[in-house]
Image 1 (spheres, rainbow, N blue to C red):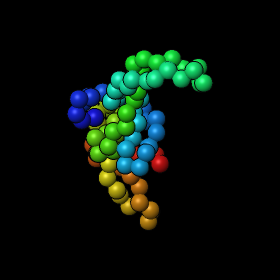
Image 2 (tube, rainbow, N blue to C red):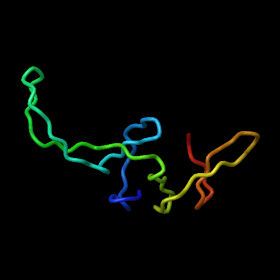
Image 3 (cartoon, rainbow, N blue to C red):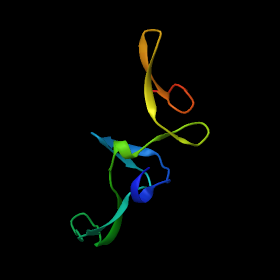
Image 4 (tube, one colour):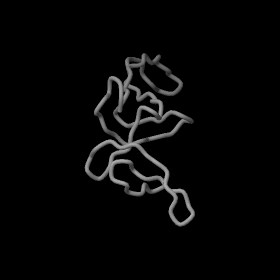
Length: 90
């Protein structure tokens, strides 16, 4: 992670084009109106906001953040971690 949440870790919950939603990271406070039709109360709600994918890195087996590269094995392109060279599962 980069930015205000640098060093935090979490699992990716959703991908939205070039953005990702990471659990417990980039949490913002949003003001919600009460809606009696849905039975929701108003107030300040914590909401996980999306991050650009360039600000997120994969973690290798040693627990270190790593960039991803492309390698050709048996005529197929596979993603590999730059730190260890391990193949990333698709």
